[in-house]
Amino acid sequence: MKSIINPPLIITLSLTIVSIVSLVIIFSSGYDTLPISSLFYFISSYALTVICYKARKLAPLIKKIRNHNLVKDNDRRRKITLAFSILYNGIYIALKVAVGLLFGIPWLVALAFYYFVVFLAKTLILFFKENDYRLSAFIATILLLLSFSLSFIARDIVKETFAFSYPGTLIYVFALYSFSFLSSAIYGFIKDRKSKDVKTKCYRTLSLALAAVSILTLQSAMFTSFSSGEETFKRYMNIILALFVVVFVVALAVYLFVFSLRIKKEKKFSDI
Image (cartoon, helix red, strand yellow):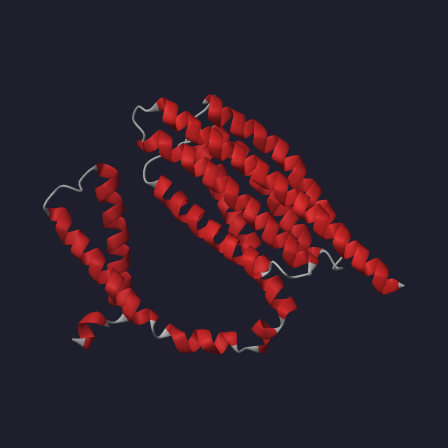
């Protein structure tokens, strides 16, 4: 029994690749109702079971990593996390630009510019030498300016000047990214809500602003891909979420401004 759920690594990798490729072909080509598809569903379920079983072996490694001095050092951990975040966002921006150019979707390229500005802001946080209150004020200014450009994107969504859409099965990829990114951003923001570290606060706030925008574009894309009729409902839902996201980004900018003033005040009193 153990050999069934714990096959060699080469078999596990082969099953994973076959599952991914077959599911993409099945759902993108409309073969999901064919009898042969049930076989690939079984293979995919088996591959997932094997992966989950093998994942338990990662527990000792994860524990060892968590107890490492590099991870326990808050400053180093923050820099590593931020560096991976920049790399992750950079890949996401490149993906948006590539898909936009490949499939002729101008709004996707335009939206990538918004992400690119935030990407530069995160890079600035990483290389900013001092834990200075002026950094949070600068990031707040960037968010405030971006909220104006975001309002124009939101206006076009509501007016349906252009429709957000992802070709083929790409919408599932972007949906997975958007929800996982939102969950991670909310968790990080709540976890560090009492932190007085300027870099951490700026990083968490920027991540939350990015996550909110990704949910806005995802909703519009899902309406375009899956909604048939009910134009009034779709329009009102886009208005509500678009208004919320713009106000939310402005609120995050104000939050950083207030945080900056508080840190400045505390620093002034500590210097006396």
